[in-house]
Length: 630
Image (cartoon, rainbow, N blue to C red; front, side, top):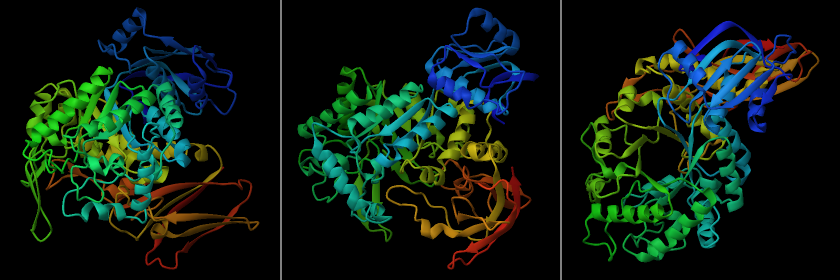
């Protein structure tokens, strides 16, 4: 299946094996380590003598590409060529990133080390292929690095890391102290942060209390994480929320808040010079640690507008633009480009006629009582520099809003991207959209990343970023391919040894829930019971069965439909929630979920498999198949 990730490939049936005898030429320890994962487990006589990493594609190779694939070659730092000759594999690339992609391509294609002779040329369809994450908690640093490796495996080239209060500030340690205390309060129980956000008499920003695990990392630790990404060819964009989402600045500096009566202010006063004295100190430290080409400066969900004595009477669009221009100018003098969320730059009206983003908005409670008027800011789009990069997470609104940015020459990428949902992907790329970024708004931990659908969207999006001719109607077939792919990635080590496969489903169900903004996974609510696997000599394996993690309801949708409210396709997120740990499989009208369990007793006969239900479980677990391998 991974062959379909290659835009141009011509491979023969014959080939050879990568083994421990295969030498790595002009490749460092990282590239050699990736290639070694593709080695055959057996010593094969017919093996490749070497994998050779070669700088750039010479003219003779370009002629070979032209003869084999047509006039397709382009100068692209993310592109690479792989030649599989009888005795040697050669990977050609013009950048570190291209070599990393080429090495992973060998791993993706290797069948127990076997790789067919032939030629591959890969170049992406879009230049920006990103993932947006928080800084990890101290305990999750190892997983952060594993996640970065997976991003490279799927040929992503950019990681946006929200910094906020989660990195040490040596000039302003009070920011870290305030952030830690604030998160401790917001994380008191699951859902508290959302209650605070929606329990006020005005619109508030979402609360990112999962950033840094509610704590903060030293600058030295963050430098190490940035280095880990850059060594692998990833561009690293720190996100420093500015203007809005600034609760991390204001916990210890409430005197800078725009809304003085807010117990948890999230917006600074853009008319107060002291706001920028603090903000620019923060930007300086972030720039020193990350050494970035670009800094994402937020500016989304700006609701507290023109309220304080300094700002009253000013035009909202001009306030917004002045703040952007001030920060843009500061970064430009440092040689750093600015990126922003673009929602406040468009006069956005949904399919149902509701106003969003930069439109004038009258906000009422559920009973229709007036709460707040948010003045329009969309005119700011004509008051800001044209070299800003815009991350457009309102692609779910009418698609014509793309043109508001593109017609003004603004560099546009999609944020909060979910590939199955977007209409007209090919046309939008042809109009000049530069790519997209998938967003994980929760803890950077494997269970949260899976259940928020990030793994599925990573693998699905990678196919949209690299494979020509994507069409929305392919969803079901492509989802099947992705389910198999991410399952094998997650379980690659277990599958290579003795293991037991169980294919199952449950009659238990509940609505899909996002785990972010202070809503946490509560394991006791998902625990259905245990499999107890008993061997002939009495040895036992217990395996917990958890809804949403390794099992789901048998009735799931494999289709998409156009939303009544938004300009997107809707799809069953409860189906993709369990992908990665499980392999969802369609059997007529039912969906089952394959799991694998490492077998520590390969020489013993499995006698009995029982499901021991949670005493509170009012549902059934259906076992479709059990296979013992090895």
